[in-house]
Image 1 (spheres, chains in turn brown, green):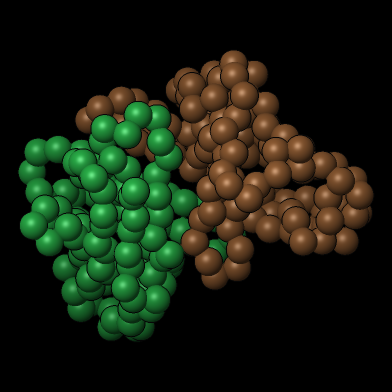
Image 2: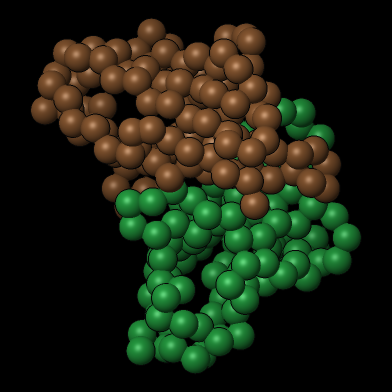
Amino acid sequence: GAVVSQHPSRVICKSGTSVKIECRSLDFQATTMFWYRQFPKQSLMLMATSNEGSKATYEQGVEKDKFLINHASLTLSTLTVTSAHPEDSSFYICSARAGTGKQETQYFGPGTRLLVL
Amino acid sequence: AQSVAQPEDQVNVAEGNPLTVKCTYSVSGNPYLFWYVQYPNRGLQFLLKYITGDNLVKGSYGFEAEFNKSQTSFHLKKPSALVSDSALYFCAVRDRNSGNTPLVFGKGTRLSVIA
């Protein structure tokens, strides 16, 4: 299947700093990528839909100025957690949709574990 | 609105026995249905999907799932469980006619296969 990578896999930062997470589709082009957040032992919570060349669509309750999303190319979307605080510590997972119709599948990156001290 | 229900938080099964992880869904139109598996501290791995065609879908690692439209279910099954199948399993749905909307996930079911 298609491959989605994320970088970094793990990051520890001080409170107040910003952290950028990259999501790449390695062997296909993705006009749409999704960013999820997962708390321990819980399901995935959709944060935003990232559309190449346009503004991201954020889910209710997700601060767009806090979680900046840029989808500058068909293979790269970035999530920047600005002025991170301990409550932002979480597992962030990106996903990219490949194919259409019968070929449609959504592939996931390996996740990024963020710890804010 | 789209939704997915995974009624069991935990499923325990002995190695070699058949396993079933339940999933029911709700969409206004026709569904795209997916199963994913997540190992500790990892992202989600695609297992199988139903888009159209045969109701019985075969996927990775010997898993299969049956789409049942009348019961709005898409239960995941495997004839003989392995200890290595122990993981967190997510069912997901998307309305086929909903444009570019993302998948909606169930809350997950933790499968524990005991040797």
